[in-house]
Image (tube, rainbow, N blue to C red):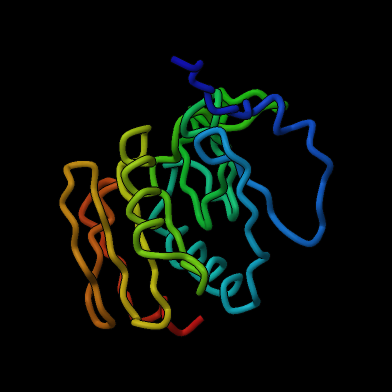
Length: 182
């Protein structure tokens, strides 16, 4: 019987030695380098719009990051969240020469045309199992926000609906209509 080859998984330390690229974004998913295209202006506008809409509710919760880097699986994973909300304590305890270990408390994704629903479901499962309390998918083509909570509860919101901001505490709700005006 022949030897079985083990897959060659890249670690975060090895990934960090790769040369920088200006034309694409490189992420590390499950020990494999994944090439992502740079988002277009609409994507950036929605990201910034989400931060502006959510910040008044955050108070002392923590930090907002656009393209916030995190290590869901500390040794073999380094990804970015389109919008991330991280508690102040976790932010402060992350060394300057590293990235957040585990997922942000809130991860918001604005899918690009190349993203599949399966990719979004996989990322949601990964994030919710590694520290995220909620995972949002903001679909600007369908004008929907799909919110998945750690309890596996999934709710679809449309324009005119109000999303409970449970991650922020209290009874605050976010009106969805302004999200799609970005």
